[in-house]
Each structure stands twice: as C-alpha cells, then as structure tokens.
Image (cartoon, rainbow, N blue to C red; front, side, top):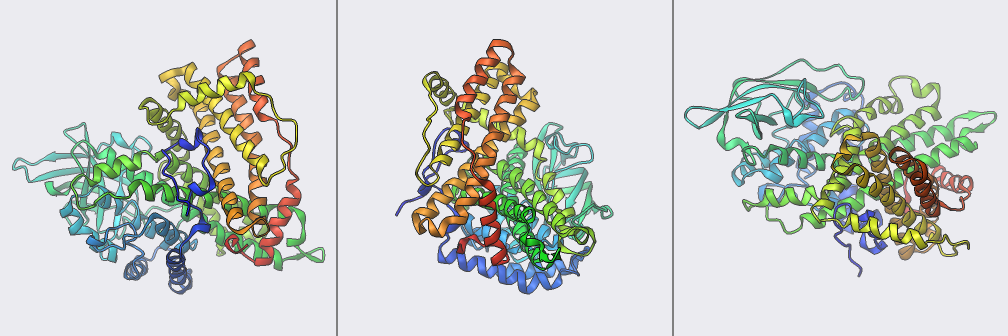
Length: 597
C-alpha cells in the first residue's frame, strides 16, 4: 500500500508530488470516520439545540458544554495520554474541529481557543511538571485556557510587548506588570498563557492563573460579530508568577508564541471548512424552496454558479487542510512528550511548516468570507435580516482574516519562510529557479490537445510553478535581502504560492480519488478541480506579470514577459457546464458531501 511522503515545508513549489504521497479526506480510516461521526453527533445533540442561548455571551453554558466535550475526549485530541489526553493523530483533530463547528460563535471560538492556543503552548513547550499540573484539567474542561499576546500598542508587532516581568529579590517569582488586549475567553478563563519582557529585552512566555492576586479583566468588548464569545483586556498588576511557571526558556518566548500561532493558523482551516459546509446547506435549502418567476431559484444559472463556486472553494480548502494535517502527523511523529527536549524538537518541526500553516489560514478565512457573502446574496433580503444563520455567519467570519496574524502579515510570512528555508539550504529554491530559467531558453509550448484525464490540469499546475519561480527568483535577485521592504511584490509572490498549493492539493486529491474509485465516481471532484485550475492559472500568469512590471522595464521587462507567455498558454475549459454539473449534484443532495459522490 502506498504511503504518504514527508515533504519539506514549501517543497511543493519545486517538487511535483504524486497522488499517493499526500493525505486526502478519501483516505479516512474507520477510526477517523467514527471520531468524526461522534463529534458531529455531539454537535447536533448538544450544541445546535442551544444556538439561541449561545447567540449572546453565556459563560456558564459555554463552560458546561466544554466540560461535556472534555468528557468525550474532544478537548484533549492533541494531548498525550500520559497527561490525560486522547493523543489522536492530526487527521482526527482536524476532523473533530471541522465537525464540531456549527457557526455558533459562543461555543466554536471558545472550543477553538481551549484546544488550540489556550493549551498547546503547554502541550508543546511545557516542562513535565507543568504538563502534569495543568493539562489534565484543560483536557476535562475543569480549567479554561486563554492566550494573552496582543497589547493596546502591539498587535502584529507582538514581540515588542511592553508587559514586563522582573525577578524578585529572593529569585522565587517574576513580578508581572502590563496589559493584554482583545483576549478571547478572558471573561471566564482560569489560565492565561501570556508574554512579557524579562529585563526589558528577553521576550518570555509565562503560565498565569487568573486566581492569583493582581490579575484582573476589563469589561467585555462590544464586537461586530462573534457576540457569543468573550473578549476582554487582561491587566497584570504586580502579579507574582512562580519561576516554575516560565513556559519554555527565558528570552525564547517567540519560539512558543510563533509556533503556537502556526498551529492556530492551521487549525483555523478546518473550522472554515466546517462553517462553509453548513452555509452551503443553508443556501441550497433556501434556493430550492424560494420560488420566483414560477420556478425555484435553484433552477437559475446564476444561482447555480454561486452554489458551484462555494463548493469548489470549500473542496479546495478541504484538500489543503487535510494535506497539511498529513504532513504535520509525519513531522511530529516520534517526539517523546515526556522528554526535556520535546519542546525544542516540536518547535523545530512546526517551524518547517509555518508556510503551509499560513497558507491554510489565508485561503480558508477568505474562502469562508466568500461563502458567507454569497449565501447572503442567494437569500436576498432575508439574508440581511438578523436572527438567521447566514446573517450572523457573515459578521462572524470577518474576524478570521484578522486574528492568528492578519492575512497581510501571513502573506509576508509565507515569502519570509520560503526565503529563510532557501538561505538555510533546507529548500533548493535557487537551484529550482536556475533550472526553470535554463528550461525557458529551449521551451516550446505543446500545440496538441491533451487526452488523459486531468492531463491538461497537471501541465497547468506545473507551469504555474515555473511562472511563480521565475517571478520570485527575479524579485529575489533584484532586491536581495531588501525584498521584505517591497511588500506589494512580496504579497504577489505569496498569492502565487497560495494558488499553487491550492491547485495542486485539489489536483492530487482528485487524481487519488480517480485511482481508487474510477472516473465515474469522481465526476464532481474532477469538475471542481478543472474549474478551479482553469480560473487560477490566468491569475498566476497575471501576478507574475505584475511582479516583472514592478521590478523591470524596457528590454529586460519585454524579455521576461515573453518568457512567462511561453508557460501561460492554455485552452480554457467550458466552466459553465462544469459548474452546472457541480451545482446540480449538490442541489440534489441538499448539502456538501463529496465523499459519497
């Protein structure tokens, strides 16, 4: 049986993976399916019936539901058994997150923090004593966690925090002073994983208990969306933090914070997939029942286009999320959580896939915004009226592009991670650029039509990589170590990288599905892949041209554009008929469910 391959972070840009080398949702084991079903049953039985109660902040109900989720092991999927956890693989943790997501901010967000940034810093970087003291209570929902990084004057630039920690004269405590802002779960958290400067310059992570003297929280923030979640400032006034509650090493808080955010970004992906699937079901249900001009509006072409596009974007995101989960499973395999070096090894493993984590965060958050917006449009005036799932989802989804690092910051990080990996020799990026440049000299576009299933799309993905490498390579050569200062160019390169990972993830998933189940049972997967690549390919071409136009002029620019033109030729697919087929399938089923297609 073929096995997935552990590719290096960012390697997809320079290496063509085989379908059998990545994990896809069609590869779920029976155990995965049972875990997913169990999570979905909990959501339908415990969370959905309390939707109205959770529309506004209801701390006691949230804590009750979290404890129930803890009893079933849903809070402890990432936590080793030795510390009271379920110790599931990353595929399972993604499934749990996706299936528990019900578009109910009161629970969804609190659960996300509890199982992500509110506990994982201890899981990954805590000492054995810290893990023994706190993890079992976090697993059970007896303690609620929160992540305190942002400050009033420090958001994206969080590592320059002004909160201070001064060692007491007796060496037993750090005296913590400062304020954290926009902290999720703050209104009822028992534990704050927070950050402060030791001796003014040593950015350090701490575990702070809410019950300690000097810890206080401000009033609840009034927010545009996610009304059921708690968001407050946390204030530290001469808080005595025992030295044994330093998380990780003094001056190495950035390792804890950034790697925690990497996982937070990656975990946001399955949440957006779960949310999108719910919205698709709502949109389809309304479209089938809403009659205009004597017909259900689901019969009309422009409504079918919207439904198909929502499904395609969700399919692509789902493909990326589970591909990344498979990589993280392999990367973290074999690390002993009881060893003192577990945090260091974990941090190094997570760092290597920061690029993929940022891609998942960006693509998923923008996908969900799109789906929510189009659902409102399908429902028309009814979609704009409060107290329905679609209206609240429209407001709630907007925050995803801001937290866990804004999408702008994540775009910069994607290119930064790529360049760092190249400079360290972890990724043969410059060699790949040189190879494509040499290939360009003798490259002649094929004039014939491809015959094989998705053969054209495979060539388009390959050529997208070549265009991306040419543009990124030219920009790197132009600006060298000053590239980061050219943010518009960096963002274009990041968007090309995102599109390439998206296209290839969908393509490999579909090819693997065809290998397993045949072409007939893979028609909708194939159609979704064809449409997405057909639409994304010219976007990559345009972005490459924009990069060249920004860095060159005259004869040099004309030469570069002629080179890109060689790789950019393609024959468009009939996306109208493909979208209609996708929409008809989903309208018939009444929901997104391609695993049974």
